[in-house]
Amino acid sequence: MRARGFLLGGPRRRVMVQNLTMTDLVAYMNGVGEAARRAATLMAAAPTSAKNQALLALARRLRDSGPALAAANERDLAAAREAGLDAPLVDRLRLDAKTLDTVALGCEQIAAMPDPIGEITGVKRRPTGISVGQMRVPLGVFGMIYESRPNVTIEAASLAIKSGNACILRGGSEALHSNLALAALVAQSLEEAGLPAEAVQLINTTDRAAVGLLIAMPAFVDVIIPRGGKGLIERISRDARVPVIKHLDGNCHCYVDAQVDLEQALVVVDNAKTQKYSPCNATESLLVHVDQAAAFLPRIGRIFAAKGVEMRACTRAFAALLEVPDAKLALATEADWDTEYLAPIISIKVVDSLDEAIAHINHHGSHHTDAILTTLHVNAMRFLREVDSASVMVNASTRFADGFEYGLGAEIGISTDKFHARGPVGLEGLTSMKWVVLGQGEIRQ
Figure 1 (cartoon, rainbow, N blue to C red):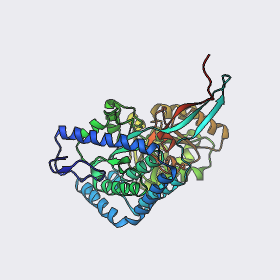
Figure 2 (cartoon, rainbow, N blue to C red; figure 1 turned 90 degrees about the horizontal axis):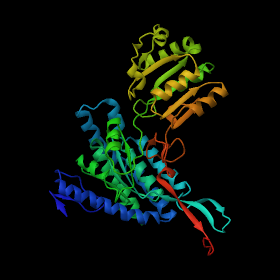
Figure 3 (tube, rainbow, N blue to C red; figure 1 turned 45 degrees about the vertical axis):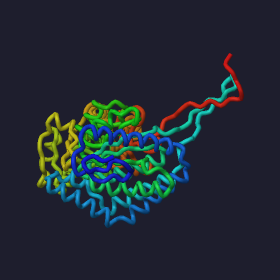
Figure 4 (tube, one colour; figure 1 turned 30 degrees about the horizontal axis):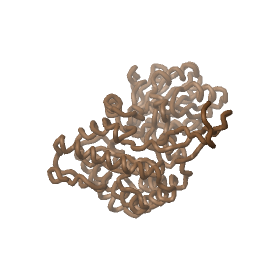
């Protein structure tokens, strides 16, 4: 079936050169959905060996295809620069050798992991003679809607393969050439392992109406995972007719406690903010106990000033930072405590107690990732228990909030929901449990 010169069928669809009519777009999306549902049935029954073979083949192809992937990625980068995208957004598009090696290693790590599908746990014998337990099974088909970062294409594909799911991917138009090149490698790897290429499909039309159709196809899609800016995720959450796994933003905090190893705190806070500005796990707000403000703030201020980080401070923090040479310093507004900057900007507040720090984080944070720097065990344990976030850390950078760093191999995203997955969503987050009953002819009396 063709519509305006665009080939609709098959796993390796060509780039659309003209907009589809709504009728053709609906037909296209239904075709994608039907193919995904068929593939999901096959993937749920796929042997572990075949899934691992596909993952290892994908890792090999990622390493072997560096020049071709770089050329595709450069087309996207050039278009982004020409369009005047902000530097952090351009950075998110970059698919360099380090990124490719990381996602290839992620594929290999996932291949080496135990297959969760079919695992039966919690089996208990009942007085009636039956045994009752739970079996881990795939979700079925998940739709992934994401912006920028083309490495997400591989992370989503690799997790879908190992978890026995099918997925429908809709990347941003700004990464179209990179995503198409990566999706082709995935299809080839699936076919090499004898698995359906349609288990991972990339929607290759940039028509935004395709997103509206994808999130309203409960017959074909079991869950939607949006990964991008707050506006995108709010829209998906509002309009979706299937369940959504999401986080809206990453307003992450570091809190420097009353008793702390100052040298360690300086290194950790610096890394949490400046190692990379664009990820959702970068620290956006720094809280400092009043007992450490005079000792800590001028020192971290000099580090931030040297790196061009703008500091938006409360009045007490502002006073402590005034003597920092070349500091980009401003008084914080109330809005700053709620802002995810994704840029070299940080809000800074002096607090009088651990209680105040926890209350501030729970009120202003996004329930993503928050860290305490402390030498007091009791305070560390209180922080872990009482901060209501998906990841809570002691004496470690918030930048560790990542599926790869957590040993999940990769992540499909980070969830700040409490059902059904929370934090980095890896293999188990893409599965559910069903009850199984084992008997020997028992009947209910």
